[in-house]
Length: 313
Image (cartoon, rainbow, N blue to C red; front, side):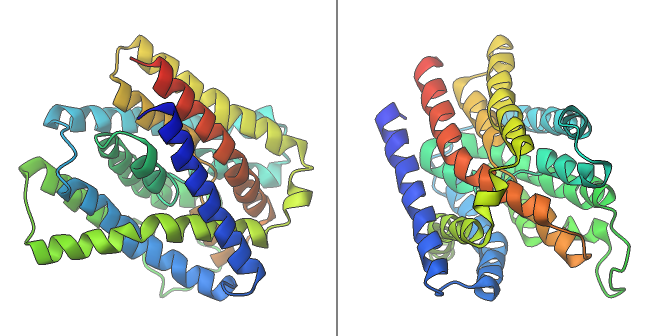
């Protein structure tokens, strides 16, 4: 995809986020409706977008590419888990806040933002890497992530066991999408068209909801925290740049490099904040991280993907 097209697509995403910001300020999307729409995006639209992309026939990746994606996904999260312990120490975060920076480092917005952006600005084959990364995300968050957050204090007994949460709609649909890809299966047109129509709603809804998150946050106060800016330089710039240079040195193809670069550059995800709220934790650090990194990532992702799309062969 050429530089002008990438800039145009990211400009569209900026506008969609701005629409969400305005809708919240006008009271059209409030906190309650935002949570319901988020559930629709995570549990219905995003999974449908993944499946629709596989069914489109535009993805020409091979079985070997899928194995490579699995290896990259495992290495990616091993690296991030280690970095999750290091960054709070580098930033000299207070001990009671370190777990939040740990979660912010490991669990970024690979699905809610990553899937729509990948669909908009990356080659079709990049989606194989994005799907695999999101499967690893679910497997890790409901094990390692909940352990870091300290799940178990005051949680209602009716809640499902953490391991069972790995088998959510998004993860199941991602795995099914890979099965469809592996065996080159085709759905009846009535089902395939339904999946496509539902998936097409993902980009607008997810970007608009990010706009509402920014609108609800105390953004001005958040940007005054010097630690968040050091975090942004490390997590949203240096890490994706390092990923590109390492993968380029190892002779990975351009599509794989751009996909992993995007996964390294997406902002803080909202799942840790949702879980923290559920168990009564203070979510100030997480909500500030989501708001600031989401705004800044619009610029950093545009620059990184535009630059490396132009220079990589």
